[in-house]
Length: 472
Image 1 (cartoon, rainbow, N blue to C red):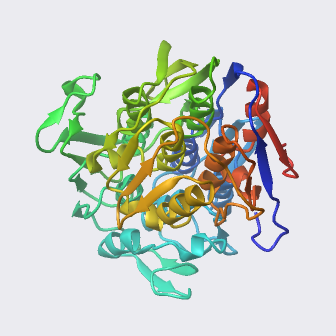
Image 2 (tube, one colour):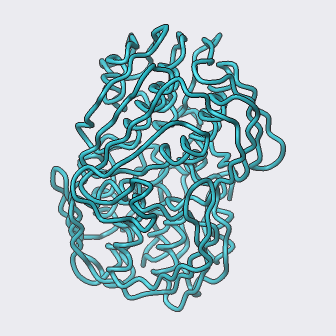
């Protein structure tokens, strides 16, 4: 998506009937990014089923192709990738354009550090405002050199010159971040010896799971008192204070077959739409259940949401279920800061549910939202105020006074500003399904970066949107 194209406003029509039906969720974005990268670093040809073909993920695929991997689209959502092996990526002939994808650029910087390459990396206006220092700092310790060409130091565009051989490090994450952890581990693949990452608070472990799937020598042990996650301590996993992950580098990765499970972050939008629809009953199929991404589901259940998991199974090393969701009378809750890493992408849609709930919801630990695709904390607060909801915004918290039903909606023609943020856009469209007056967003184009068939799938449940977006 090019930011200088004509904006495409969109609005939701208030639902007049309960939502019904079932949908198959698109592939998980986190797993899809990692599928392209790890397949490119493996020996042999991997096959990926259910890949999310959104703009962000495809940008990562193009980057792997530009650095020597062979990527072939066999059919819808099915790809083959012939890798170059650990340390085998080559310098691209042209700049790598990551569009709007923070995950794509940060993980790829790690993968490139483990290979002797030089590459210039660029992104769109939104991505070029996001900080890269949190990944370039540890990668510099591993031998990478960075030259920044952006408006501020630590921002895109940048040029990376990787070492001939990366250095292993023992790194303690200063903030909870699965992207930073993953970046270091991917760089560690090309380093001799053991690369270790200690996180003070556990974050999503897709990279660890998928590295094991590809045959990497990796271990993960709880660091501090943790709560077993149901997979058992023999695997060395646990929820709680944190974990230490150790990876032995220069170990060959072997090509494999990946069945990408459905994205719980995408499922969040029809999930909340169903909960806010009186008398609704919908089924969300093929949703990944990862203990480090369960925060939204836990909070919504605490708020009184009627959510039932059925048909449990596994895919790509992850638990997968189908969810049956029914219309519910939600109540406000207090969300402590320790829950934030498990639902950092879902706070916008949780805020919409809180706006329609009875009572007060207090969200804590939101500082990370200020450095996402937009300042999401401010975008949520400003948008809700525009829609007639009482909100108090703090430095890293948000207090929402629920309306106990439909929100007032926009009182004038001023649209909600999305700041080119896909999750802000989809969240306020869902809120518009449960608003007295119409809620319009200023631009729907960026939804394609993460959920290209959002409009189509929501329509199958009975949601109505008015937009010129090509997916409508």
